[in-house]
Structure formats: C-alpha cells, structure tokens
Length: 383
Image (tube, rainbow, N blue to C red; front, side, top):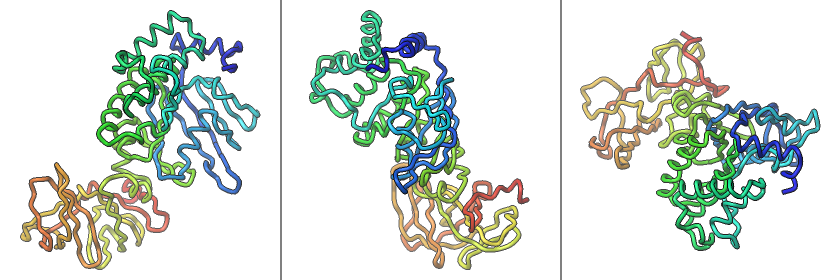
C-alpha cells in the first residue's frame, strides 16, 4: 500500500479516475532465466491500447512467466517493458517499478479473495488501496456489483459463494478500480465447462465496456480463439506466431502452431515430389502451385476434405476406420495404405466402419510446410 502514497501514486490515481491513461504495452527483447533454464527467450511484443491479447501455449512455454514480468511479480534478466509512456522495467536503465506503480489490475486462477471479508469488503479493498474518496468509492462499488449481478450477495463471505460467484467477485474488484490494464492468469480454469462458457461471454463484454488493455493467459485454445483480438502462441519461451484467431487457424506459421491449434487436430502429412504434384506412396495431392522443394509437409484441416460415399466421383479411395458423432458434426478417421487422416462432415451424413469413400482436398485451404524447417511456404513466392 505504501507504493500508492507518494507523489507518483497520487498522480496515477487522478489519471486513472479521469480515464486518460493510454495503456499500450511494449515488450522489447525480454529474457527471464531460472538458473540454467530460460523461461522467456528474447521476446518482443507490441500490445495495442484496448486490445484483448491472449498468451497461449502448452505448460512450461513461458506464458505465465511473461504475464508475471508484466505485473512486476518477476524481475526479468534482460530487456524492457513500457506501459503507456512509462518504462516499468529496463535492464539497461536498471529500472524496476513495483506492481503498485504499474497502473494495472490482476485476476488470478485462485481468485485470491480475503476469506474474512464480505463480497462488498473484498471489492472495496482495491479502492481503499487507491485511497479513493468515499463518495466515489461507494458509487463505483455499487455500479460494478450491480453490473455483475452481485448486489444481492454483497454481505456474503467467499465460503458462501459458488465458484462462478467467487470469480465474479475477483472480477468486480478489478473493474471497480478501473485500471487501464487487465492481467488475467487462467481465471476460468477452476470452473466447470458450462460455467466457463458463460464467463467467457461476460469477460469479453466487460473488457469491451471497460476499454482496458487485457493480457490473458490460458492453455485452452477455445478461450483463446473465442475471446481475443490477437493470439500469441508460445513454445519454449519463444513466440511462434502473433495473429488474429481466424488467421491463426487458417494460416499457421509452422507445424507446431498448426498442430496445436484446432480440434480435431490438423492433418500433417509428409510428401515428396516436384512441380505441384506430391505423394507419399499412398496418396497423391495436387497443390495447384509449385512449392519449389522436394520434401514438404501438407497441412489440411479436417473440414477441408471432401468425403463422398459415391465411388463414381473423382478423388482417391479411402477406408472409413472410425465414425465419431459430435453433435452438429461427425468426425471420421480414414485410412489409405499407412496414411491415416481425420475428416469432418455434417451431422446428417451417414458413414459406416470399413466403408470405401472418395476423398479430395480443397486446394485453396491447404498449407504447405518445408519438411526441414517446418515453416510455412507462401504460394506467392513459389508460383
């Protein structure tokens, strides 16, 4: 609390209450090590004012470490972090602003509620830390509790609330202080599937209404793809791709991103050839353009396969190995020789195990990767 009592803290509070802090974030050449292990390796990233950016990746990829460095809970070894127009960390300038002076709010996976405080007292705590005038504090408190549908639960304690209600209290505490930056570390992972869906909708709406720059950590690609303006995919402490969700899905930069994004997973098939026709001995695919190398990896989403029970149509013959109904769609496992692929069709299509079908690939939707570098090959440069 002492961090908010100096001249800088007073100016910060006034700026927050007026809502005139620009919350663009710049991360430049950031590195964080734990002994011999590099958790973040020379990461650079620009986050726009008001953006909902999601850090996505498998466990141990560095996403939470990066978030904690932004929050001031971890001290990086190298690089620079700028929030708004203020350098909050710089290894060169030897600057390290504490969390209380970074003009941000954070929601944790554990919610971090005070068990001895009521809902109202928990939400008011952040406003008290900011030394917000009582009249302003009461008004903001009432507004946010009503907005989140918690006004009738204001005198309850955390132990008397459900998981979703506790999550709303943590969110209310964040919203009440009106920080220009939201940091969220897997805040929905403790909720059941149905409640997670409801809370995704609420979080996205609240963030949009608040206009806050948001950095959100998750390992759940559904959260990332449905909530974000851009997704940052990380692996081994490095950024693999930064793109809007649709672009990330349609044009993954490399085979790691392609395989990580999408459920059911993408078909990745190693092929050899020349010109625009490639094969692996089992299947042959015409890309419609020339990759310019001999060894490639074909990336084809399950919905980019056309599967027909009519053996008179064009295409190659595959055998249906498994049929998996999934509500509005059916997932089909297909095999030709040693090559196994996954297709996706509508729920009204009927297929049976061991049935022969014809399969064709949608040329415009295929991605081709260099088999050595695993990087995407652009048709523009290889016509």
